[in-house]
View (cartoon, rainbow, N blue to C red):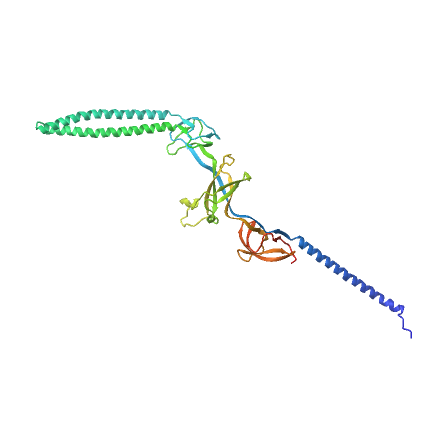
Length: 395
């Protein structure tokens, strides 16, 4: 018996349905391909964004940054102790001088006159003493005669008493003459000193930083010694730093430090901290202390140290940026600070480690931190790879 055949009319009815089914199948395949491509691209991008570095050994130092001002280690304002006109200046600004070198001369006319007058008074006092001694010898002889006559019973009591009084009075006159001589000698020494003060010599060896007075200028030193020039030892400079109260307990004499000046940031100078003042400068000035004792503004303490300046490259009043080393660890395990993840506590952090081409979380214990590197006390080994930059990762 023959099977019924599919008529052309039924085939025509099924054709649109088959076409629509094939279309949706094709769309589904394309969607799967696109999603797979996107997943692959995202995974590849994540892998490219992972930047790793090895755990290494190195040095870590923790520093405190302060600012300071340079000044000569020794600076002297050379002035005049006597009145008069500046006759001659023997140096100019920038000259190097040695101790005892003649710097300036004041007209010595007044001082020479004072010395002559004091010398004359001394000679007069000495002459008066010699005259008083001659008179004393005369009175002494008269007194002895009266004393002998009294013992023999032939003397007169009134004459004895008069001779005794004259002798004792003359002894006191000798003492007055001695005092006058001492006074005159002191006047001579003072006059000689004032005459010497007209020759102004260098109290120290150093550089003439500046000349304040000019030749021909009259100097009057009634109360304070007027400054003629400024002399300083610039071969060794002193740096005065201002240390905040937040850092003062970390700073003590003997700490190593380095600094640079604004004029030459590339040049590094090294020294050690010298004296650290235990009281702020403001507290020494009672005028700045309020009646209530309340503190106004931030508190700073002075710390000073010296640095060699043989080439005189450092100048007075330069600003220095000083890095004081307060802690140091050498040849320890360290990683960059930006490799630290979430903080567990003050000494423990999460760190992402690469193991078998995958990332894994690990907790590490840290030590010294210098804001660039951090010491690893426990949790990592030398050579292990850690992630320091990560947008996304595949674990």
